[in-house]
Image (cartoon, rainbow, N blue to C red; front, side, top):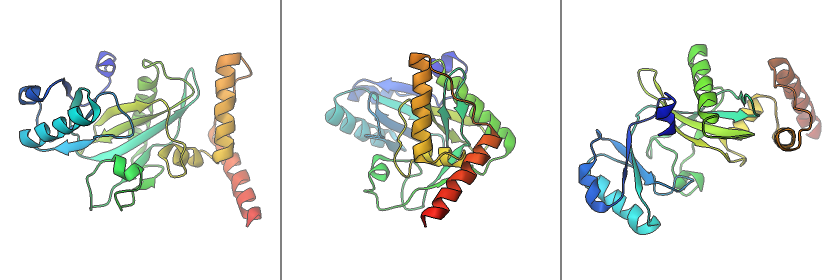
Amino acid sequence: MIFQQHGLPTPDFTVVNSWEDCSQVDLPFPLIVKPKNEAVSFGLKIVNNINELTQAADVIFQTFQQAVLVEHFIAGREINVELIGNNPPETFSPVEFLFSQDGPPIYTYQDKTHKFGRTIQLQCPAPIDEELTRRAQELARRAFQPLGCYDCARVDMRLDSDGNLYILEVNSLPSLGEFSSYIEGARQMGLDFGALVNRLVDIASARYFGTPRPMALSSKEADSRQLIASFFNTTKR
């Protein structure tokens, strides 16, 4: 709703509050459903007809005891843009998720917990042109501020076959796990894990305590950081 109020592209959606309401959903299939108030892709599923929608919604009602968010599924590519900092936040290079053929083209809870048995590859920078890269980064910045985010976030998007980007959600506490897209985006900016954590601390300190604001991650600085990180990685071997 906030995205729509601020003119940001997001899939058409509705909220289903009961099993009976499924028949009133007026959105074209395929749809994607998930619990309205959960995280880490709990209950996430693509449905292709009313029977599948009803079954998926029923599982969510029984398992999570909450309403179901139903969205039009945007077929296409999954693009993430990570942000760091405040007023305004900086953006990392977009990251693309590359899904194998032996599973749904979405990042599921089973994928995140390595229970699906497939590997999701991350490509950063995403293989998109400069104009689309700028557009994705600008949309990420525009989504960050009206939600009241600060310090860091990850904006999940889908890119359809016509080159249209749709914002799916903003994760205000992105995973810093070893294989996360946030870590991959930071690495491309020349920030290894230690440098990233230190920068996040500096940014939060500047916002909360008024300490000096960290310098922007300019391309020159990022290149320098990358060379330093490469040097230390080489000497460790």
